[in-house]
Length: 119
Image (cartoon, rainbow, N blue to C red):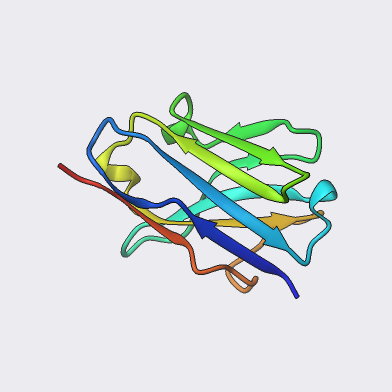
């Protein structure tokens, strides 16, 4: 049974930092591509960062230079370090995995972790 458990969210002031974690079980972590997604209120879920099996990373333009995705295969955990946070980063953040095709809205998702950036 696949389980993805996100944690680390919270309330932070603009310019602050947070580190999100996602612990995975029930998947072959070492051959999984991994991604962090977010869904703001009233908007569709978007992929903000991904890391491949080889460790290469890709970011959406709005977070490039501020967010860093990393993975620990031994701990089966993927992280998202978020710096210089902005109010527009406010959203529920989710992680997910794929072997060949990125997950769609019908895929299984965890509960997410809320990130709120506000003064």
